[in-house]
Amino acid sequence: MTQEAFELRLAEKVKEAERILEEYLPGEEGFQKTVLQAMNYSVRAGGKRLRPILLLETNAMLGGEARLAEPFAAALELIHTYSLVHDDLPAMDNDSYRRGRETTWKVYGEAMGILAGDGLLNYAFEVTQAAFDRCMEEEELRRCVRALGILAKNAGWQGMLGGQVVDVEAEKLERALTEEEILFVHAHKTSALICSALCIGGALAGASEEVLGRLDRIGRNVGLAFQIRDDMLDVIGDTQELGKQVGSDAANHKQTYVTLHGLEASGREVERLSREATELLASLPGSHDFIEALILSLIDRRK
Image 1 (cartoon, one colour):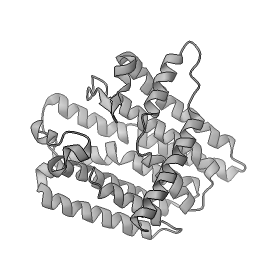
Image 2 (image 1 turned 45 degrees about the horizontal axis):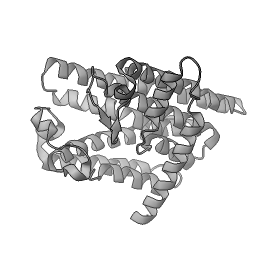
Image 3 (image 1 turned 90 degrees about the horizontal axis):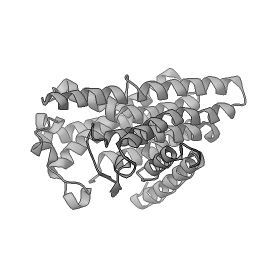
C-alpha cells in the first residue's frame, strides 16, 4: 500500500469512527446535563481514533459483523477518553491543555472532571448493550459476552488501571522505575487498550483462542514499541513537529527504556517488536495490508 493510499484510507476510517461515536454520545439535557456536556466535550476533543479503527478493521479482517463491532468500538474510545480526562486532573498530571484546547477539568472544574471520567467509563458499558440487542442468534450473544470480558479486564486493574497505579506510586515516592516496572507500565497502561481493540474485534468475529493469543501479542508489541518510540522522540524529536516540549524526561529525571538502554539499543528493540508484530499479523487470515500500514505508522512516527 502506498503512503498516499494509506493516508486517504485512514482519513476515511477516522471519519467513520467519528460518525459511530457521534451516534452514541448522550443528549445534553436534564438536571445532570453539565456532566453530559463535559463528557461530550472530552470525546469531541479529537484524536487518532486508533482503538476503534483497529477494532473495526480486525473484526472485518476476520469476517465479523460491523453491527456488533460498532458499539464496542464506541465503548472502547469512551474508555480511552475517560483515562485521558483523569490523567489530566491535578491529582495526576495536572495538565491544562490537550490537543490544543483546555482540558475537561479546566473548563468544568476538578470535581466535574472526575465525574465526567466516571460517566464515560460507566456509559461505555451501557453502550455495549446495543451490540447485545443486535444479536440474532445464541452464538452472537456468546461472542459479545466474550468481548465484554476482554473490555472489562483490559480497562481495569489487570490492564490500563494497573499500569497507571505503578506509574503514580513511583512518582509519589520520587524514585526511578526499575526496568521490570517500566515494562509493566507500558504493557498495561499503553498496550492494554490496543490489545482490547484487536482481541474484541477478533472475539466478535468468532476467532479461536489461538488467534486471540496472536492478536494479544501483536497488541502488546505495538504498545511497547509505541511507548519506546515516544521516549526516543523526547530525546531526538523536534518540539514544533511534535507539538509538545521535548527533553521533559531528562529534565524531570524520569527513568525510561531509553535512559536505561540508550537510543541505539532502543531503536533495535522497536524494530524487533514491530517485525514480530507484522509477522504475527501476516499469519492471520484475511486482508491486513491496511492494519499493517497503520501499525507501522504508529511505531515509525515522528510525532
